[in-house]
Amino acid sequence: MAIRVMLVDDQVLLRTGFRMVLAAQPDMEVVAEAGDGAEAIEVLRATAVDVVLMDVRMPRLDGVEATRRICAQTDPPKVLILTTFDLDEYAFSGLKAGASGFMLKDVPPGELLAAIRAVHSGDAVVAPSTTRRLLDRFSSMLPTSGKDPSHKHIEKLTEREREVMMLVAQGLSNGEIAARLVLSEATVKTHVGRILTKLNLRDRVQVVVLAYETGLVRAGGGAG
Image (cartoon, rainbow, N blue to C red; front, side):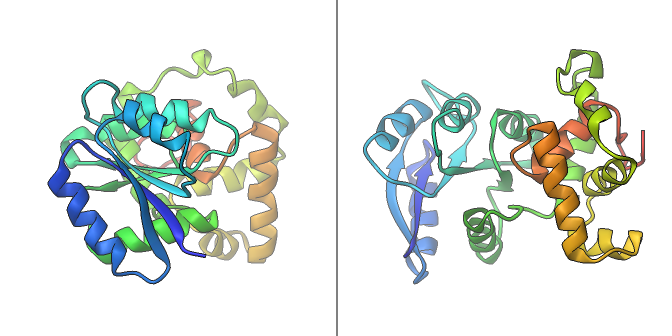
């Protein structure tokens, strides 16, 4: 079954470009489009969508708030935030709102397609190192750990789980973490799953965000 994609952007030309790229793929189908966040939420009520490509700066309702409302729904589609280099703070807000990741608007077609497939399959939408670089650029905007209600839950993690969490936040893949800690990749995957469960997080993107917010990892990728 083809991946059902929704395009949300107030620039018609940009939507047209993305639609042309996606339409050429045998495993993808653009099933809906919207010009702003409010329209996107309305369309989603009547249309089954797997992945939403969401712009951030739009009239009426921006992409961050739209993402927050969409991700709060039962069994929501995955959301990919579309951003530019000078709007990184919006990408972070989008991740906080529940997006599974972010892509630059000028991303090469191959990378966009790979990201959509990765999100649909439940994997990380972008390389963790890319997420780390994003967070590093505006880590001063992060709230203090004292304001984060999830901070105390980190104490529930075992020493090994904290170690794995720090490596995830530093941009290492499961395979790289396995090599670093001399573990099997399956064992690392199990640890990541337990971290998500204990901290009530959706995916490894949220692991990265929480690690930075709580000071477990500092800007630059080092341990806090």
